[in-house]
Image 1 (tube, rainbow, N blue to C red):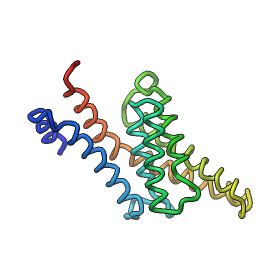
Image 2: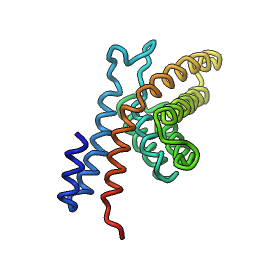
Image 3: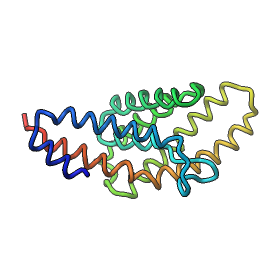
Length: 186
């Protein structure tokens, strides 16, 4: 599917930014739509992959810290709109976006299946920890209950999200690289 789009943007360079925005926004909408979906084989003890976290990592790997953080905030607010506004997902996804961009991946980690999966695994643990901290500050539940459940959720989310990360990362990364390569040198 990506190859015909590559050919299309080569033939019609004036449409390149619109098609790029369409693919980017479309991929976010797809991640939003499959976020509440519980398909067989895509969940572990009731926990499913964090598709928006995977998208934020994919976006942030080759972006600046601010671009990663802003993407995290926007996608976090979209997730808050689909769920409860507290704890906010914007804070955890902004931190994930900023940290992922801060890794300066192109310098420290090779771009392959394993490194992307490891980054997503670590960032899922970070995101779930930020969520658990928000629950801790809210009160109402015992800290032991929050942190015991946090370990279960963080590990399940990290495992599933890292396993499914290539499904989101590789097509988007290929697309963004082809767009970057087709940009006229200025």
